[in-house]
Image 1: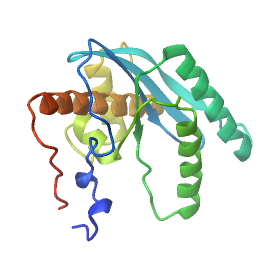
Image 2 (image 1 turned 30 degrees about the vertical axis):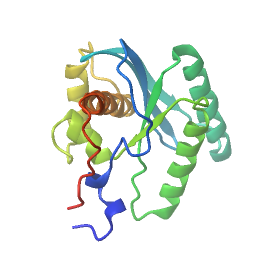
Image 3 (image 1 turned 120 degrees about the vertical axis):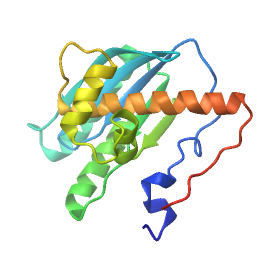
Image 4 (image 1 turned 30 degrees about the horizontal axis):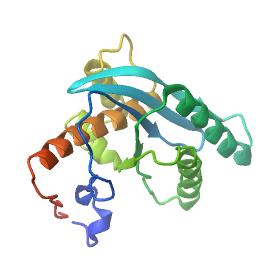
Length: 197
């Protein structure tokens, strides 16, 4: 049981920081799985409950020097934004482990990715466990399970790479959360925060 409300992934409310969403005929969502060496991305188009994959892949910057990696992530995502013009961005929240150095590098990569988001484009964050719960049905799912479910849900011909699958999972998680939030807003239901357990 978490002592602090902000530390529990169950306490995350995607609507808390977002402006009210509106129902649209179609919404293009970019999912991001930031990493200091590999940044996964996935672009999906949502039409009601139908999800279509437009693009997915990975920005692999492993060969570059550490400082150059951030610039390459920024430039790669800027190009992705100009090509696909997503209306909303969903990003996986940083998972902090005991290795402070790794967490710092991941935070820098995430910052470079978020700086590439055009002004006015809403960004939504989801905890890794919340993404797994939305896609697989278990917050403790393994990476191969996420990739398998993404292939099934999005009717892909082959299983995507781990980074691309994670990014698509974030986009799918946001698509589901968005649909429920729009329905709740239309019904006039108040925003409810889930208590930390």
